[in-house]
Length: 529
Image (cartoon, rainbow, N blue to C red; front, side):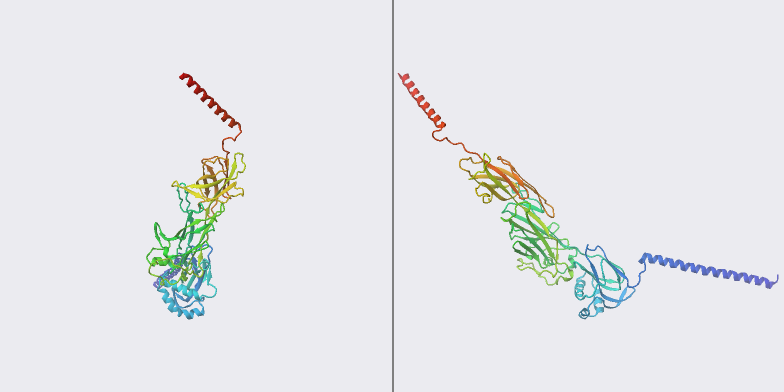
């Protein structure tokens, strides 16, 4: 083979090798690009999930209040670049009047960007800008989608207990810092005979003319710190059978700590409707009298006398309370306009409530009272005229408290009623006895009652009377709250009238005595002789 042939073969072989290397390089580069693309896709999945189109953001309300509707209003808009909003303008929900009044959008947005999310300045701006909202909200619900980049005011349509300004340049989640105040009314029950007093509960029974203790307790909302000032008003209503004693005391309770703040509260009473109200609860903290935060409780305690109008029986005497309160932290007044020294006397005029205050459901307690009916009869069970009675309650200290008597139930004065009793021991005394009859011994008996102590609508569940002395039994009517019994008088034993056999016996006995005396005299004379 010639030298030139050898060179040609060698060149062709080298060229083939080069081509193969080039093909392998191209293949490897394509493979690398595919791998890089896959890596990018995987990274995107972990970082942000599905890639969303521009200007399609979502606001999610976390743990919303059940039944409430949330609205999003665009207050600023602009150009979005790398999560930065520039060229800011007023949003689509700001009125022309608002744009003029509020000034340049860029300046306001810059000012807002420098304050904390829950600062006083942020809340004040939310209050101000909400005055100039117009048009339909940009979105409604607990998941608000399809939003363009910008700043949004989130409002609770139903209660206005929270408001947020959010910068939306990505999907965001917000948890409302809300909470609704609550109120409870309670009463204590005391057995005068044993001296035992219960804890605060939902029902009690008392004698007429007794003083009944009541307690009202309010809790505060979780967003209490968001308010510049906080209006609070216990609207309490007594039944006609109870008369307010004008002795209310108000306390701030933090755990076991209890401080009286009565002088801060207006106390009003009008025909059984009571009001214990304060214009600004925050003043108490400013004056340094007591610390108040979302975990504090506001407690009112007072008493009312059970009067003669009290309803007897299972219907009882219901008493209820509602709480009215500030429910919009963005319309709560100027926190700087508060007295800095504690008041020395309670206010004499009622405070001005917010335009649309919140209101709790009604909470009710019931005070029961009972009666006993005494029917006077003779030994044959027939109605007997002419008796009079007094009823006394045995007190813990051994004394007796007289129970007022009703006018005789019947015109012939054979039936008597004593109303306004509660549980305990009683003594019935006959103070006037029908002519010709023996006075009864005092009768001691016990009244026992049971009623729901923890219930939304407490009910009287049992009523009974049992005699400890005296031959009486009670018939019970739980609905009427009555214990009815018969008290029997028996005819007395007296000396017989003239001409009766008894007189003859006495005469005979007298004659025998005379004869005996004569015999004794004769005997003595004979002995002397």
